[in-house]
View 1 (cartoon, one colour):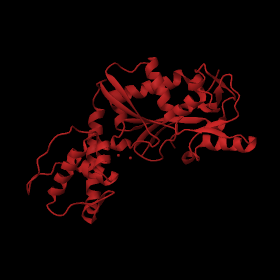
View 2 (cartoon, helix red, strand yellow):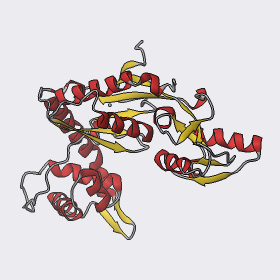
View 3 (tube, one colour):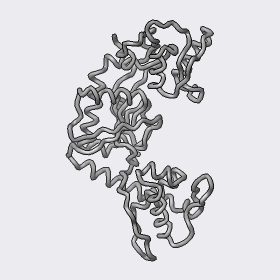
View 4 (cartoon, rainbow, N blue to C red):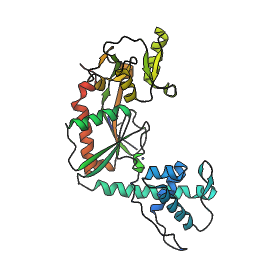
Length: 317
């Protein structure tokens, strides 16, 4: 049995290519395998624009390359063009398993090629949740530890873990590790959270998440306090930076990560760290890419940053 704090679990990724014009194929012409990813992106996202955002290509380029791919089969189109977007038809559905097989093989080769490079240069993209975004951005600005000079770190904030197999990110720092995938996972540390308000204010009102986020643990905890005290919510905001800004202005009290709020001289902590609101964080990387020099360097930097700030993250004052 493998320990979960440094586990390899068992899953698939792609790099965005340059935007370039591609000639329409004639009958019998060799298929351009790079267009397979365009076909799959449109199938997954349901529109040319969304597929373009996912692949880093313009909408006209996606449209042109999808037409090229459809023309390769010389018959009907593979999507029904509807007012709300593109929907796979029966001919397109029939191609999905083969296209995904091509994607899987191509991405495996790409990851293994990347893993052979010892170069400490290029961009490493990290998929992060909002608390980790604030922390890692601060660690980058603080400059200790330092990322190797030739590497650019790209933070991509999202509540959904990126598909590391399709190279939507090179690695992820997330609150919940995935339960499957061909992944290396290691525990980084725990973020403590407490209740804060602006110094000199005594409003009993709260700052919380929106009603669509009522299932969040912070929202549920605040709701319980509201029922116990009869107080109210003064403001709802959909992310931590907005809540932090509102609490700083004196809009009300709210829950913030200790490492960020304890450093803010305008805020005072009203509670010790709340155990049920603490958040464990994990680093996640595809097992193939873990061996790439630049990815390995960024993993080491992330782990060192969490280690160096472990007391602040735990809310120790």
